[in-house]
Image 1 (cartoon, helix red, strand yellow):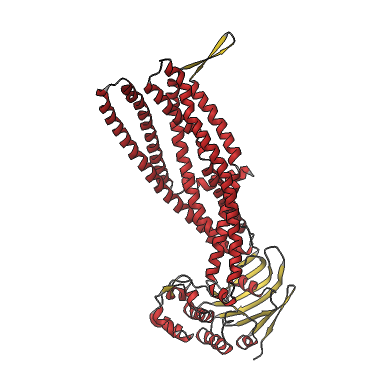
Image 2 (cartoon, one colour):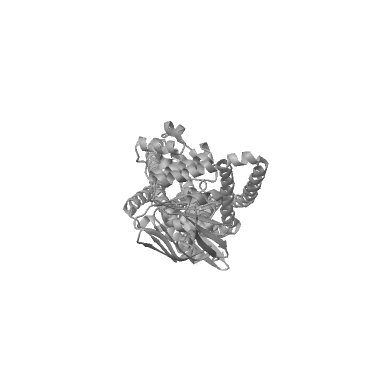
Length: 568
């Protein structure tokens, strides 16, 4: 499992660095690394300055004071420039990497109806929108922060280990009649101290990984519940369902707070340890260097330089201790993204058993069986054809597979087997019970999924024909039209869309359920009159629909079906 996780992480991480943008990314990466190494160089110079400056202070060398202050000012100025631009360029790299990764995830999520298959598979991929928008941003930010932090600390360790080794001198450990001489003893103490500290930090903080993962999930569920209320505000208001919704909010928010309390308690333990670990590291170098200072073999400047060097080495060796919380967050984010990738792969890997062929002038099903994702059969061995201009009505009891068959005919239901023949380059349009109206102008909503390219006269005629002439002056108004228009108005707008798109075949899934019967009959007659060559497949329960269709496909349950002509 861990090997697979590491493999997925590597695939997630390496994609950008082997992509078509790799040279830009690697160039920025090299610059940031160079700036970080440069800042480490100036830290070493400032560390040496401590020795000269405090020795001058101890010796009351006033003539050296102001030149040393000037030297420090120059070193500090150059260090600040490098540090600021290192962060700026890192953020620039972060934008480019996030943009590339987001585009790849969006392309994969929207390709081949993966976003739809994830829903019908009922996978545990919760809130894919959050994973693409927030988790990718966190992954890139945390990965770069830790990567450059690690590189800087390694450079710091390499530079200051030499300084600390040279400043430490030797330490004699008497054992009986012999004495062992330890060279660079302060460096070895720092190494042992930090290794022990890292191991203890992992024991104390490892629960944070799972808690961070759960916190992100609970926060997303809470936000999604509020979004659902906003999208269904009118229905909830009709039902007076505010109290029930508040209970739902409270339940989800309780999970957010409950998990956060656990996160707080675990973080408190880790902070106790990290702060205690850091405070002990401040006093230890003074204790270790004190014998040399009081023996007169080390000046004040050397003492302070040693303390500074020990602190830098200790910080570098303790990088994983101080960054443990950040590492835990990164692991939680990686798990969410890897899980999302796994579920997308599962949706992509579905073996398509329905053979699609472009031929002839009719839409035909040849020995087609329709199944559910779990393999259960809804319809068995369906065979019929729909010529251009023909009207087919699909009827049957609820749950027998009417809408699912319609989805298969529209080409979005992949679960089944058999052969579907469709005329070459034919266009199809699907009208669900609640039409989809994208955010934007009414003009865009009318032409969806095509680009808005019709003339004003054509748009005006289409709206007037379906009884929506009042909307003509508002064609370029940008708003949430699914909230503004009633369901009946939305269904009439969908019929106007059919007139504008003029598909070869249209599939209507109870697309007139919110309309009265005279209006329903009028709209069906309108399609027959305006688009006589268009094939039509409808799902509905009203008996009045029989009068506007030529044949009826009756689904009888348990996979059985039959096709009957409708007598006028």
